[in-house]
Image (cartoon, rainbow, N blue to C red; front, top):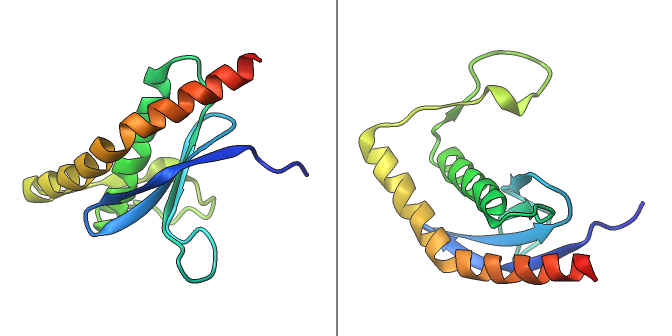
Length: 130
């Protein structure tokens, strides 16, 4: 099996945590609270780079950091006992205070990483054309 092509964008803070941001081949995105065993490992968000528009990259990026932070704050719930382990049925519930806290954490991450992500994505896109 071929190894997935990816570029590490950097490590950025979101509240009291550091999260590694990675651009990978494909589309969509995902996050890992514990990406692998060992010391000096931080949570990771991976964003699929194979979109033609920056808007699509940014949409996935926002989705993943929002969901990551809300999950870490204990605001993500699964309303059923389905055994399919489908991730489409999560519900997010929060107070206005929790919403403000979530936004503060997400804003920190976005302000520090968006420029770097855009720069790396442009390099990725250019390398695909060659």
